Each structure stands twice: as structure tokens, then as C-alpha cells.
Amino acid sequence: QVQLVESGGGLVQTGGSLRLSCAASGRTDSLYHMAWFREAPGKEREFVAALDASGTFRDITDSVIGRFTISRDNAKNTMFLQMANLKPEDTALYFCAAKGGRYVSITSRSNIQFWGQGIQVTVSS
Image 1 (tube, rainbow, N blue to C red):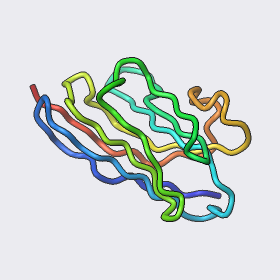
Image 2: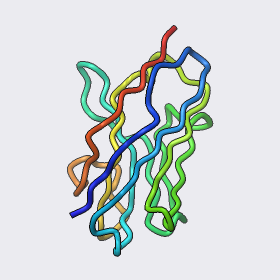
Image 3: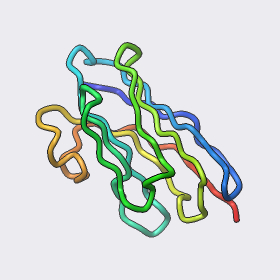
Image 4: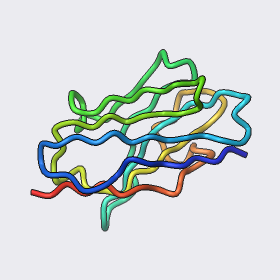
């Protein structure tokens, strides 16, 4: 089992920045591919960004390209999401996610093995 804990969320004005962190614990002896998803009120949970276990391959959804950056520090079992130029439509509950096996298909929430509890990001207009 892997436990994931998010931190760094909060309230920010349009155009502001936040950095989310996700700390992994438990069976972290095997590296996992990791991702961020988000869930806005009344909407389905959607993929935001992902990074493979080695930090080589990454995916990011079109709506945040140029604004969000995903990274990880395997020595500290921590993943980050740097968010800049935030917009009201970025308001959502953000979830850290992890899966083993192949990196392919990490963008689908049905393939995720472990989830964090979620952290709120609110962008005011």
C-alpha cells in the first residue's frame, strides 16, 4: 500500500500561483508513476498532469500547458505541481495519484491504484 498526502492548496486571486506537494509513504521501495487529477463542483474528476517513475516522460492536459509544471523528487518521495497564472476555472479539489506497472494509460482515472484525499484550490476572480 502507498499513502499519498497533498499539501499547498488554498485561496488565490486570478493570475496568482500555488505549488501543490504530494508526499508518498508506505511501499515506496518501488517507484510509481504519479499524476494529478482535479474535480470541480458538478464535474467529473479529470486528468491534469503525470510524470513517469524516472521523471523522463510526462503528460499534461491542454488547458494548463504553459501554466502548470509537474516534477518529482524521488529521494524525498514527493511530487509537485507548480501552478502559475491561475484562472477561476482552475478551482477544484486536486488529487494526487499513483500507479505501478506501465506508464501508459495513467491519464485514465480507472487505472489509478492509489489516491490522496484531495486538497482544495480556489481561484477568485
